[in-house]
Image (tube, rainbow, N blue to C red; front, side, top):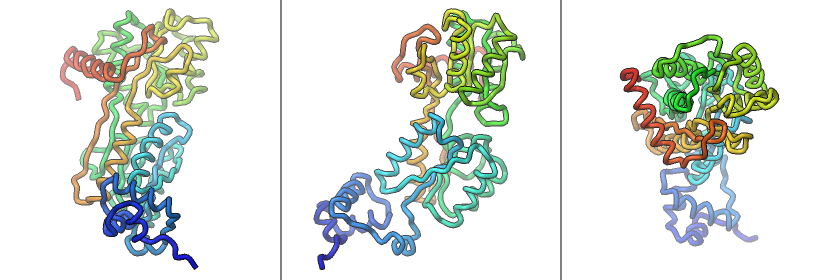
Length: 361
């Protein structure tokens, strides 16, 4: 009977020491290029580790979970791609769980970490982090990274976007085009993004010297059909509206559907801006100007923070903030800009707005 591949044969195939191969197979901190060489050699030789015995020995499953609110939302698809790429290179598998934005389900996922069914968790709570989330995070037996805002002082690694600056940037862009009756199509105010974008919209109006008009605001949900419904209601009561600030690309796509149905020219009659800069923005008709909140970058950052925490649990909690950018397309009458240009524009425009209205956090 032929003996199966061993650590020794894998080391020979990879051109590495037995110690290096052992470190990789046992989940110990190792350079990513070493991990790739070992995993490639193991695959070529048909090596199948005894995962049960290994897990019992070193308490590692080589699995990471990602709890997200909507598995079909393009922003989470972008995050999953990047998270999986980073984790796979380090020898980890990614497991997905859709919470549907339910805080109770999010807390259950966090409390389930006591069973150590994964080595770590990345979670993106839609409605923010409450006391139960914090209690579950601080008592978890494995590392947790939160994508989104957390209360000050919460001892957890965090990756944040900056939707406030993104909204200020988009509103400044619309104002610069001569638009003065700018409506807001938002998601639920009980969600973290809905609340943040509502507050930023009001702040932008103040900084730009425009009055806040409740009749120009419609709250729906972060979906295309609810975006269409909200746009239809808003347009019916505000016929003189000349621009729409949409809290997500999906909402904006719904608005474009309604404007097309009503024979309104975009951007001639109504300019439209979305948020998230998903792949759908570039293929919409007309192509959609959108605020990039760096979802792919946030995914990469979250995965790297988690890997760092697995290697060294003594690190202090870290916060990574990803800057927004504006991709100008046909829905506001512009051509596409480069990513570099949009980031520079975001910083310059947000800084100018802040100076106009005083220094604000």
